Length: 434
Ligand code: S3P
Image (cartoon, rainbow, N blue to C red; front, top):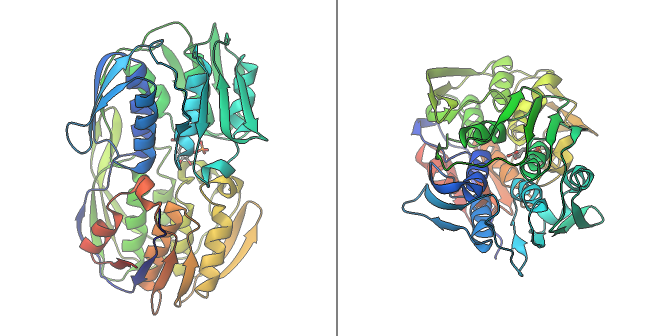
């Protein structure tokens, strides 16, 4: 597919009420559990992104009927825990780390072999973090020196393990829990810092006995999943771009509707408030077992902070946006304890540092973070390296960069945020594809 570049020019103020698309993490999990459940499940608010559609296509290839009665709706005809059928063809996870890692756990317990492949970016992402503990559970998985493609051998007898995650990762935790459904005995996961617990909550909602608390989860194999109805909240990580945009463009006043506020996702909200942002949480309620609320964000002058390291796992996907907030803030923002950023869809410390430097901002890189000295952003051409969140973050930088920003390689925005450009321009951005 051809490359896509964007130009984002100074604009605003930003105004309006926006509904950002459904949560990516929840959408992936809903498809997988619904596929393995007995009976028909409905998913509302499903993210129509390339990542989640890739997961749906993989499950369809494994024999699951998934209908799309309307945009954002899925009807999944569950085949039961042992009802998947093997596929001779490779299973293509596209750009999705979540898809590949969770599916690896799920496939480790099947009777058939599978091969998982991904795009260029996913093919560079480390998979040993999942395959190593799965092998301890009795799985057999071949990697290419720790990277995809992954060949998952079927017909293995899995047994539960007690595993302390070396890095906080909801993807690894979830892969092990999904393998644990097929394992003999108990699977127990302990995390160095609590991560998003959607898999645990959703397993419980689908009727699987599971014990969990922040930082730990435990289940046994040999039960069944019951079909369920899933309401997917709006993705906080997509809302995040607008929280930063309205915070940095003078005169802005935006409202974001029904955003998922799972506490393991909202670190950026706290970080922005520490920087002086004006964000109100309105009409807090629950939807599909998750806390949601409307967010009102108004322009406020931001100042640099030393980011509390405890917030890092709760905002692991929001660093590209935070880098831009820091660049537009007064003073220095120091980020440490975020080495995981180097193995996301791109090396997000390097890609954000390079782009911001091009725009005239001082960035000192560290192995596990960066120090950004806020200032006046100038014009320039930056490379998103095919990373959706980097592309959207530089679109925000363009709003306040004198002369605008040209952003190269933006096609992957559709992996997580289809319709970003339309939504952004609708509230006052001046963003166009070239
Ligand atoms: C995710 C977990 C996080 C996050 C990713 C989605 C998930 O990855 O960065 O975008 O849905 O479990 P890690 O588990 O690798 O930190």
